[in-house]
Image 1 (cartoon, rainbow, N blue to C red):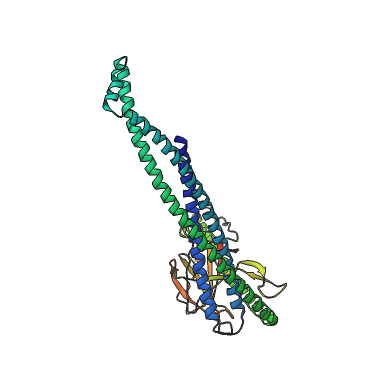
Image 2 (image 1 turned 135 degrees about the horizontal axis):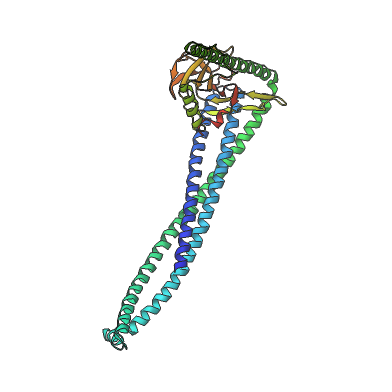
Length: 416
């Protein structure tokens, strides 16, 4: 019986671990489903324009990526449920076997009890003892035997109830598995249709090579403007740092009466205590920063990668492109100070916010609500994301994160 209880405890602990894994998979699936609904909404808005555009293609690519992830998640969920079902089926079988053994043992005890059920037999059993000590032991044995019979009866009932619970759960898990398999088939069918549509879009868009090459050059020009502005900020901060260091050296020389020593300041600037604190807090929130929009999907990733349509052409993105709905607001991902608000040729307005040694950049904005030198709080609205007036009519926020002159991947910083 002891080995049975240890085995039961092991199985329950194993099921608990799998339950936690299943909960995580379900949460991830729910989040992916929400993202798919959102990309579906963006596609429906984009379809108001009958033309096949790069924006639609990018959103469709994101939709395919999300649906593929959803199918993978469903497969994992089915795998965990199969393990659940196997373990519960094994446990039910083991419990039934143990129940049969207990019933046989209990039946033997009942037969023995019936043969010795009279009080006269029990008294005679005690009185026939050779000593008082033996009589006491026999009395204790009878009491323990009676208590053991009672516990055996309770254990049999408990195992019966547990078997019923496990059988019911087993039925539910098998039904859930069947539902998941049906859902998996629906998603796979939908994915096939989306990939077919993706191929049709690609064929049409590849005929617009010159148009895309022109837009790519325009985007590269915008990226260069943003990089120049960030470099100006860094140079200005270095200049201020040198001035502060020089003033500090003058004050020290004046107080000590010694000749002023030339301060050593490199290409970086010395942060104030407040800026050091901001930097530390920003770093601690890596992978937990809020999104720069309330709702959106990333349709172009950080770094150098192939152009989604043009062959043998690479795209260099210093941040990420986040597609959202028309009229959406951009918001600060962390508390900081606005360093720059400037108009980008061909790219609406950009806002750069400093968080200690970190900079966050928000471009393609209209109706900007902050100004240079202003302190902003986390999630504070900084402007409206612009919607292109051309055929694409896309609403995309271009978002970047810099650590001084080093470009960082925003997807490694914002919450997922």
